[in-house]
Length: 426
Ligand code: 5CA
Ligand code: ZN
Figure (cartoon, rainbow, N blue to C red):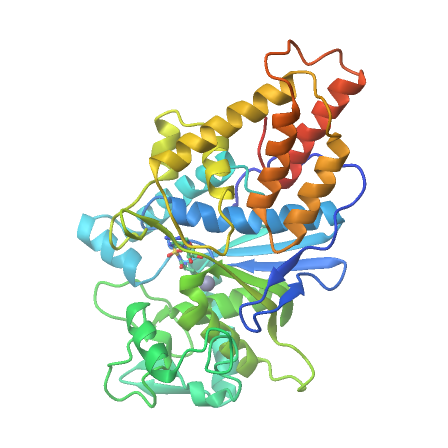
C-alpha cells in the first residue's frame, strides 16, 4: 500500500557516527547496521483506532534511527507492516457496525496524515497483511515442510518445540529473563490462546485460522481462513528484507510473544548454518507511554490522539519535541505539562535561530547532536545540546542578519541540524 509523503531531509556537512542501539536479546549496545545497506523492519499499526501518543513515540524513535543512518550515508531499507486484518480490528468493526475494510482504510489514512505531520520518514515499503496473504501463505508452507505445524480443529498452529533457539530474545537466559509461566501469562494478554485445549504446548502460536462465519477469509493451502499475527511479520520481513537484516523494532509490549515468535518462525522457515543469523541482528524496543496512570491503549481507551491535538491547533513540531524529550527506552506518562514544556522549547529555539547567534558554534552543536543520537538514540541529550545553544543566544536581538553573513549561516546550520536529525522544523 502507499506510505506517506516524505519530508525533506537537509544534507548536513560531514558525516555522523554509526548509530548504536541497545539490543533487547543481549542487553549490549550494538552497531545498528553492519554494511552499507541498513535494513529495518518496524512493526506497524493495527488500524482500528487513531494514532495515539504511544504509537507516535514509537515511530518517532525509529525515525531517529533512520535519520541517523541517512546522515551516515547508509542506503536505508525500511519496511513496515499494517495489520489490516486481525481480531481487534474485526471486533471493533463488528461493535460499530462498520465494514472492517473501511475501518482499516480510514485509520490507516489517518495514521499516514499523522506521520506526515510529525515529519516521520516513510518506509520504503508499507505492506498490509491483506495484500501479503500470498507471501504469508508461501512462508507458512515452509513451516509446514519443516514439520513445524499441526492442525487443531481446522486451525493451524506452530509448535514452538520445532525451534531449538526459542526464547533467545526474551527467555530465561536473556536480560528479559521470562520464565515459561511469565510467557504463558503474556501470551494470554497479548493475542495468544494458552488456555485452548488440545494444543501441544500452551504457547504454540496460531499460523492460520480457519474461516469462521462472518469473518473475512482467503484461500490457502491450509484451507480458507486468515493469517495469524506473528507469521504476518515473519513473512513480510523476510520477503522484503531477506532472511537476515539489521534491526527489528517495536514497542516493548511486542518483545513477547510477537517478536520472539516472528524470529522463531523465521529460524524454522529458513534453517541456516549455526554461524549465520536468521532474522534481525538487533532487536530494539521502545518504552510504553502511559496516560492517567495506565499504558495508553486502544483497548483501555485512555488515549491522546495525534490527530485530535493537530485539529485543535497544536503545532506537530511541539508534539514531536514532547516525544523526543523522553529517551525511547523509558516508560513515561503523557501530561499536558509535557506538551506545554515542548511548546515553550519550540518557541525558544525558533526565537534563537531568528536572532544573532553568539558563543557556541553551530558546528559544535551538530557534532554533539550526532554524537548523542548515535549513542542509543539519546534524544534528550540531543535536545539539551540545542537548549544550551539557544540559551547562549542573547534574547531580544533583532533579525537573523543578512543571508550569507556568518551569524545567519550559524543559525541555518542549527536549523538544518534540528530538521535533518530530529525532524524538527524551526
Ligand atoms: N500491528 C501490531 C504490530 S505487527 C501492533 O502491535 N499494532 S499496535 O497498533 O497495537 O501498535 C503499534 C505500535 O505501537 C507497536 O510497536 C506497539 O508496541 C506500539 N505501542 C502501542 N501502544 C503503545 C504505548 N502506549 N506506548 C508506546 N508504544 C506503544
Ligand atoms: Zn509485527
